[in-house]
Length: 387
Image 1: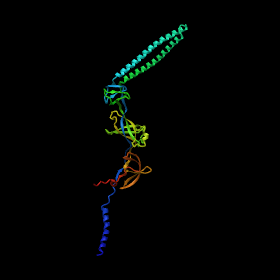
Image 2: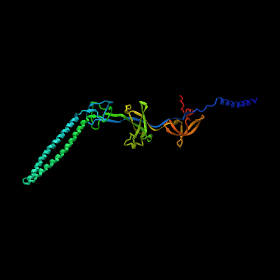
Image 3: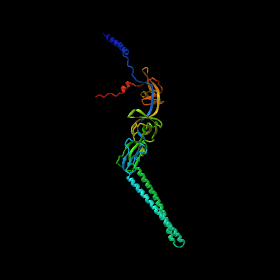
Image 4: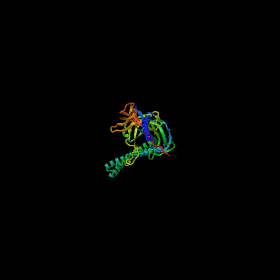
């Protein structure tokens, strides 16, 4: 009876390896399942992204330089106009009266000059007689000096009257110009994009010229792209640029970067004093022009701009998600799946569009790079709250 427990122990000891062998061969352990992506050829483009606003390349605010009531408006919103075309008229009565007043002042000054010139002739004859009489001892020297003084003063008065005539002439020219300003003409070819003042309104230009109309040349549009201070160091004039608009996201409009404004729009006199405390992001305007023959592009539209830094056609590329830690020599660690086992490679990267990166060396076409581990992703996933 004492040998029976020993037999059970020996049986159990023999049964454990047999069960393990059966489980190992009939139910093998699941192999690790990695998320992979092949190294493949594709077109890559590295660019700086920016948000921009469309403006006409030429835009003019047309104002009134004289006071008065807007008598008539010759155009309406959306009209195309030519340079020199009449746009509006201001009631000219005030300016006509000013012109008549200036012309009257000029006429009075010219009449005074003619009268004074005639008087000068009379005084010169009197002076001549006094000289003759003094030579015959028929007059005193005091009379001669009086006659000379009258001639000299009259000549001086003629000089003053000549200056008054010049001033009156300027007044007439100014009045004529102001009268001309009551007829407002187009300064260029373009389109009326805003009507600010309506017929019947009174305009007063005491301090600044009030705006009546805004016109623009919409054949060419300028894009102001706001480039962040982190990217502006990589942006240079001459680089290729393209953008899309919300109304046509599938259509690209191309141009060439013309300039980078040297200072942000937010710069002010006290910007130096507040630079240390401000937390506002700083943006610099990149400017470029784009043809707009059909006027599809409108003023103040928003543009999603890409400033191309580099592009490559049909180069080897891998997903950016496959890149590991960057080494000191600039290479990246990448895991490649070979015979169902991960192997680490060192890879040199070129262009990077933040989705895919160009492979310069370290991998060949068709290599499967590991972009994720489902087990690790499941472990990193936050657990559901229990209520």
